[in-house]
Length: 381
Image (cartoon, rainbow, N blue to C red; front, side):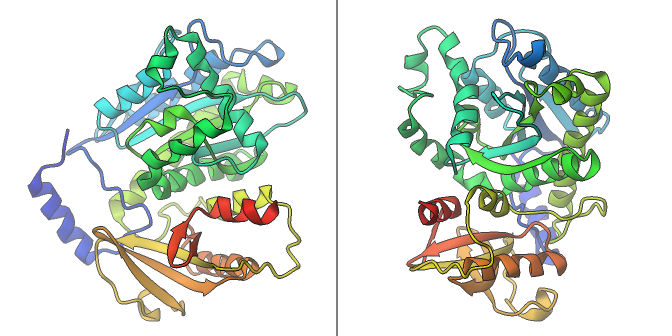
């Protein structure tokens, strides 16, 4: 369902009198907020089977529980890529979301590793910050090999070839801010409410995220190969708790979207970090040293809005050194301007304490916005 012009006009009037958050992808479907829930694997694809547990079953149970909670809200429509133990091709999962013109796509999985690795991590589409992120994406993408004639369906995409991932980021580029916002909200619920080990919000090349045309995340709920965590995820208690955290993250996101305010609406979601901090954990550096990046300027993005606001301290809770840029029909608002990465991290923390918990660091090279993770990765090599 596409939004009618009348609804766009009404929404525009609302924006004029309300300050919007960084989540600027307005609800696409009149009357219903459409969420597509994707339980990873299924049918002849069990996913990982660490310690004898079945990823496909755990993911499905979590997704059905999330959906049941969301369906209690009359203004939310839930669509499932599968509700039973059946195999659904990756391209089929993306098609379901696109055909529904969904507002969100959430894919649920369980992790595996040949070590004692454990904890939750939530992914948005992007280039891999390290080999570990590539391996996670590779594992989830290899399901395409179970499909007949997969080469003709995936345009020669090879999950084993790093170069195949470079073009994936383009399609989701417009939704990165919103996807990151949702991912951070879900991840913070895991960490703050359930006290699960936080492996962060990360970027990697998942095909199913690449081919969806809406904010999309992939949740790795934990490692079945780590026995205590596998047992937790295989339990009804564990599945219910993980489902509740995902549900709350979705509802947090929707409330922010609806209210168009520059701060989180739930007081119990605190210490929200940007994706740049998750990336920074992957880059080994001495935090006590000054990190100057030649030809790179860092800023903190505070918000994005179709409403043109003067970048003055009284409009941004007293913050100084503000700037504004227009991109399409949106105005983006920034805080800070420095080539020192340590300094911009400090300013990002200041922004959060001032009431912008969803703010995040961006990078510019020669006046053009560039991928932050690529900048940090290049500096680390």
